[in-house]
Length: 75
Image 1: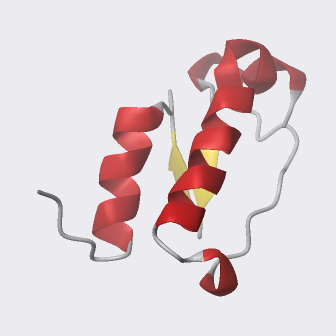
Image 2: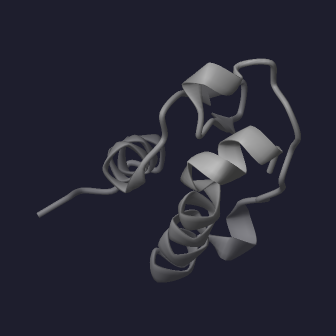
């Protein structure tokens, strides 16, 4: 949610994660919250899941990561 990540497209990233969680019916099992600077501005957009940082996050990277994290089989 920091200005650097936001300017690099994090608004789209957040919207993707919200839709992913809704589509996979995970909203009740996952807490999604914003954070400010994680001192990695040059690697943004940045997403932190549990304790892992995902640099240069985009829809393709996040979908693959989340599918693996939640053990969701892809077609």
